[in-house]
Image (cartoon, rainbow, N blue to C red; front, side, top):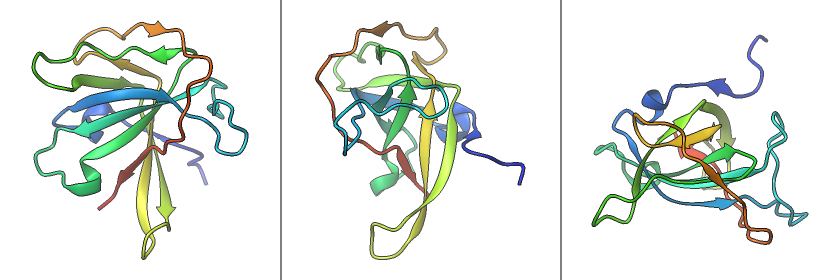
Length: 145
């Protein structure tokens, strides 16, 4: 089969109404307690908590995590005054469909990845040095429905 691994996808295809970031944290391997590394690039993975701006998105579809492979913790754009979140765009996105069998019945879900975070319509954000001991396990799933 010609398709191997994640499929490249445009930010606007995944988030046609835009997206808002709530925060970013390192992803830690559950068993080793070490930073989880991207299998393709070898870079550490960071989980960006995202709210989909689509007014039709409901439940689990409204809030997702996008895994970003980067040497240092991605710096998020500035907050919108008076709001607790930040408008963002992701660079070099990819999607990996998988079967999520953790619920009552199996369903198709999507793991979202990116190589960068930026202000909508702007340049990529600079990275800051990652905290040495911080970490939390996160999944990068966007529900299929």
